Image 1 (tube, rainbow, N blue to C red):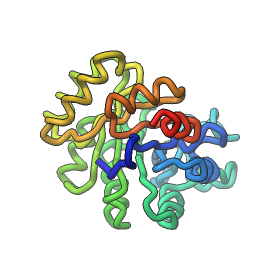
Image 2: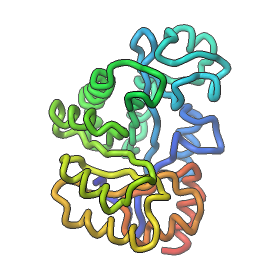
Image 3: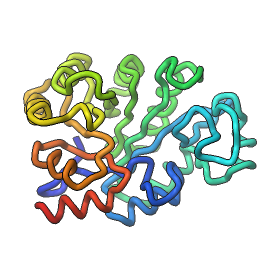
Image 4: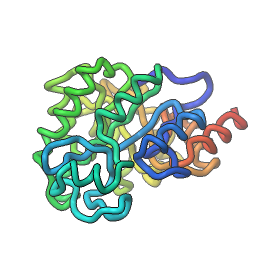
Length: 252
């Protein structure tokens, strides 16, 4: 895991910060200004193979455009809504902020987003770009797709990878599965971590072979943030990084 600040988990701004349009440079700037240790953002490929930072498969919710990302040429996206950054632009920006951590979620779960490009190709291209830029030490690649994470570890062993999971299975079981696959971390939905389940899951990490951290998403209220910190999670992904940091500092 990345080095943690004394007395609290790392805090990542989920798609930047909810106070600004998600997955935009403005949102990332706001998260950084609020004190976040890192930013989490999503990557997809356009029809012509340009890697862009956008969450949904469909452009309608977060832009003034319509249509699926993977069926839309990049120039149409850029001409229609210039707030959608490319991965290259976000990494250029990140390189100017020394020490800023990155959680790059690659949207590549088959059947999840109405089609899309071959999943191995997409995540391996992202991993190669992270490696080429020398950002490996401050980046984790995350995905719902275990098979693609394993492909990254085969091609780029030094790149950290984390498995994103929904609240359908106990986090205790998920840690064991992630560790058995040689993954570096687990990013479970907050709802999968409750009561003693959270404490036990964190305890398993301390003796795991490769799975070295748990970083739940999306932790937005003070109570949940404090409970997660007290249980010993390595990080927190939050829509409200500033508020979460304030709660963690107050309860330190």
